[in-house]
Image (cartoon, rainbow, N blue to C red; front, top):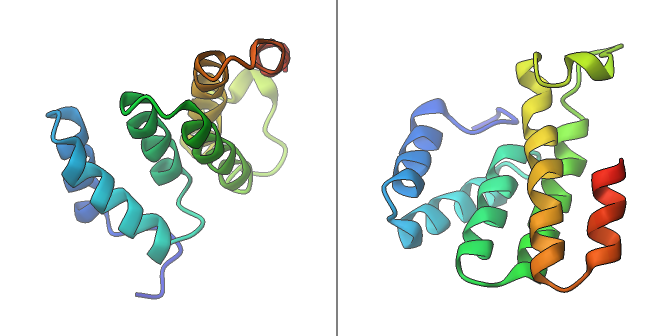
Length: 119
């Protein structure tokens, strides 16, 4: 495996587990995928959502920060802010930013959550 992103079929299987509520299997698969593909921003986002589901907001925030960090590396050159949701490559970054304030709010870090929202 020499790609920097996971195989599509494995990713889809993990997403299916998440969507069907089979969270233990989803967590195992996404954990494996981010271990094998450390730049897999979407996997960190899903792990953040799974941690929120398990009422672990601090862990969720760390996963979501990693999703933002890795997602930012995927941006095409010269992407304007108005196109952030239009470009597929920017979506892991945007999803991380959308979910991070939820995790921070649940962790009681309201000021930090507001700062993220302002960004």
